[in-house]
Image (cartoon, rainbow, N blue to C red):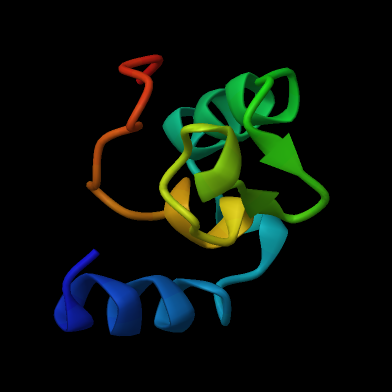
Length: 68
């Protein structure tokens, strides 16, 4: 993920959960059931991107598994 996308995702963490979009929630729900999930991480060792899931779902980045 680029530095700009990383900074934007951290900025998005300041947005209250109630302000999350349905798209963000859908991405998060997909990630929660994914086999690459390892705690809060999308595990690189399992074929994921290595990002913190809650941050990744708040970006325009794509899922490395093409799930969203």
